[in-house]
Image (cartoon, rainbow, N blue to C red):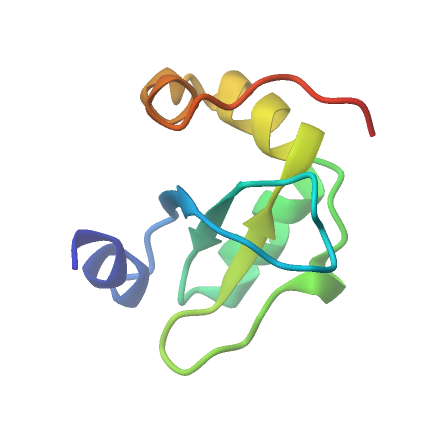
Length: 94
């Protein structure tokens, strides 16, 4: 609920959870980076050299899904070590 509230208020919000998708069998977690301020979310993508075309425009909760090595590197750069440790996210090969 806190993530949704932050996203709706135009803040960048980070939500990491366990996840399974057959298209990405090696990845077990995803971090959703959400923000209803699309210019802020787009700028965030560019800051981390991620393509904004992969933003999911879902209802009131637009977000970018981080997974794999990008997930680890971005969380590390942001100092979100609690996400890394809680979900046992490790640096992976691309």
